[in-house]
Length: 395
Image (tube, rainbow, N blue to C red; front, side, top):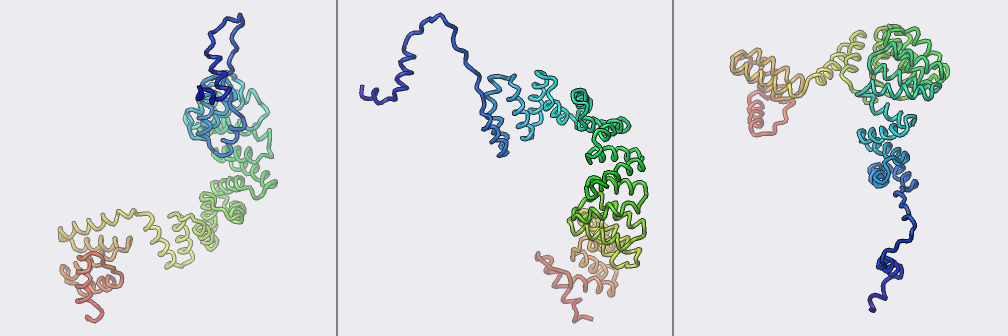
C-alpha cells in the first residue's frame, strides 16, 4: 500500500478512470484532432538547414492527414532542399491534385521536370501563365523550356513577351538576347544588351552576353569594353575572357592578348587553351622562346601521364626489333614530355652499345647525370656506371 501512495496523483486519476467500466452517456465520442506540427519548430529546422530532420518531424502529420496543404508544402520544400527530388515531386503533385491553382506547387513541378520532361514542365508553365499572365517570370520560364528543347523561335516569342513586361529586369534582357544570339540575330541582341548596360554597366550577365555576341559576329572591337569591365571586377569567367583573348588576337593586339591570358592564369584558370593562345601571341611578337615554353606546358597538359608508359614500351619494343634510332626517338620524346631521367639513360645506353656513337652517348649521359635522382638499386647501379665511365672527369 505504501508503494501505491507514492505514485503521482494524476497517474492514480488516469488509472482510476480506465478502471471504471465504460458507460453509455448517449453522446457521440469526442473526435480526436490529427497531430499538428509546430510551425516555429519547422522554421527552425529550415533555418538550420536540417531538412532531413524536418522531413522526419513532418511524417506523422502527413500520415494523419495526407491532404493538409501546409504539411505537403513543407515536405515538398524540405525534400527538394534535401536533394530528394522524387519525393518533392510526389508531395507537390499531391498539392496540385488538391489545388490545381497552387502557384508554389506548379513552380516546383516546372523546376523538377525541366531537365528530363520538357513537355510536362511546359504544361505546368502554361498553367502558371494563365493564372498570372502579367508575371514576366512565367513567360521567361516557358522561354527557357523551349530553348532547352531547341525550339529557339518559340523561345524568342516567350522571352520577348517577358522583356516587354519588364525591360528593366536584366534577366529578361539576357534571356532574350541569348536566344537571339543563338539565331545569329546579333544586331537585335546587341540593341537589347546595350540598352540594359546603360542602366547597369557592370552587370556580369549582360557583359558576358554582350562579349559573346561581339565575338560570334566577328565584331572584335566591340568585345573589348565588356571584356575589360569583367576584368575590372576581378572575376574569372572562362568563356567570356577567352572571347576577349581571341578578340585581342584577331585585332593583332598581341600584348593585350598576353595580358588577358596572364590574368586568367593568375586567377586559377590554368586551361591548356589559354597557354596556347598566349604562346601564339608571343610567336606573333617574335618571342619564340617564350612561345615554345608555353607550348611545352600545352603538351604536358594535353598528353596523359600514362603516355609515358606507352613511349617507354614503344622504345623497348623497338630495341627488340633492333630499330635503335626509333627507340631513341621514343625514349627522347618520353623525357621531353615527362622529364623522367631514366629515358635519357636509355638513349645514352643505346648510343653507346648499339650505335657506337660516343658523342651522342655523351650528350645523353651528361644530361642524365645532371637530372637523375636514383631511388631503386637498379637505378643506382646505372647511375654509378654512367658517372664512372661518362662523368666530367672522363673525356
